[in-house]
Structures are given as C-alpha cells and as structure tokens.
Length: 325
Figure 1 (spheres, one colour):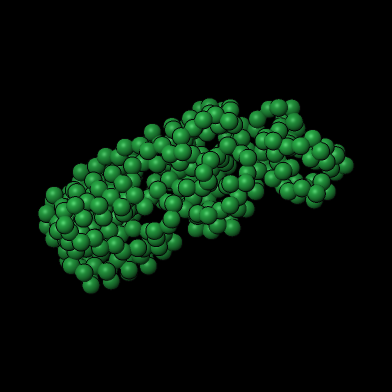
Figure 2 (tube, one colour):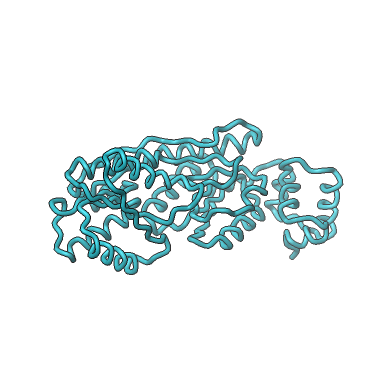
C-alpha cells in the first residue's frame, strides 16, 4: 500500500507539502497541487482520512504532545484536555515525547500523516524547527515553539516570587531553589526569576541547583541528599511537587524536622498532590483554566487559520498552604 512518503517522492515535494495539499491548508501553487494529485492518482493513494479531507471535512482528530503522563501534572492536564475535546466530538492522539527531540519530530510527521486538525504541544524539547514549518494550527503550553504559535502558561514569575516569599515569611533566610535546566525561551524560567527577584529585594543570596528533568527519582534523590548534606538550607523551593516530595524524604533521612528546621514549597498543586500529600505547601497552577484556554485557542485557529491571537496568555496562580512552610 502506498504511503504519504511515496506520494511526496513521486511528486518531487516534501511530505509536509503533500499533507498541506490534502488538507487544502496554506498558500500553494496550482502546479504543486496538480503534481501531488497526479501522484496520488497514479499510486491509488486515497485512504479514508484523505477522502474526508478531499471532501472538505475535518478528521476530528487532535494531537497532544507532552513529556509523559506518568508525571501527575501532565497526566491530569492530558486527561482534562481529552475530556474537553471529547465533549466537543474530537478524539485525541497522545504522543509522549519525553526528552527526545527526534522522537518529537517523528510524532509531528505522524500527526501530519494522520490528518489531525490541530496540535496542543507541551513537551520539554526546544529548538525544533519543524514547528515553524508546518501549517497546522498549533497551541503551546509553557514552551516557546515559534513566533506564530501562541503560548498558554501560568504566571511562573509570580509563582516563584510567591513560593519564596512564603518560605521567607515562615522564617527561612537561607533559601535554595531546586529546578530543572535553564533553557532559553522556556516560560518556566520565570519560576527561577521570581525566586531570585524576591531574594534580591530582601538582600538575601539566591542558591540555584539544577536537577536534570531526565534523572530517575532514585538518582535525583541521591543528588538532593548530597546538596542538602553540603549546605545548611532552612528553606527550599522546588519548581515541581515531585521534587518537593523527594526533598521531604531526604529531610527525614537527615533527621531534619519540617517546618522547624527546614521549610519546603513545591509547584503544580495537582489533585493527586492535594489529595494524598496535603501536608505539602505548593503553588497551584489553574489546570482547568489552562486546559479550557488551550482548547478554545486551538479551535479558533482550526476555524480560522488567520485569526488574530495573542503571543502569550498568562493565568494566575495561588498558594495552597500545607504544613511544610
């Protein structure tokens, strides 16, 4: 059976161009369209999804690209997105890209081949040029992908400021941040910037420790234990809740009492954390509002590719007070 790549090779164009012709998306010359349709006819390439597209009907498919649903935050976000899209008669194709740029590129090709109507992307990989090349409607969560792709985020800067302020007001004066690698253009850098700005305003010294996202919990816990053994911090802000839970585990191993000797604040505030680890003080992202806005913006782009959208949408965060700070 002929594949999309076979059509592209016979027509002498890219796979992306073939998909754009099939979807009648973007500006294409009649010469290019003629070559693609001729190649499709010669190869008898017309699966059902293509037939629907040629008839002017959408596939009712949405691609979701995220690091992985084992993380409670992304798992809850994906489930919420799927529920909202299902209620609107859309189905989703979930792509777990982890920290693998090539895997994400392959998924983008696959989503194009499956004629999805649009994509919501929230992976950690940056600098993937394909996002600038494809003509599909795409909305990003918390990641810069391209100048023409809107970003939906929580207020990361305010969240970093609020977490650090909470630690300081609880009595901490030697406050560290445990965060992921700083990546140019990533909105989540705002958490670190808010942390540093608050401490600078209080004439206190920031202490930044980067813990790679791809570390397993066991390896990350070893790294945390080494840091906490070498430094006598009385406050730690973690840029995600799972890291904060590891910090609490290490504190118990080191016989540090919380919050008397060590105060800890996390970030995300998913239902799982609130229900099973209510002791953790954390900054809650407005997950329901984030998913609603992501879906709303994507549908606007699907209905009108030229509609005017803002480059960035920032939603407020709030502190969930627990017993750790």
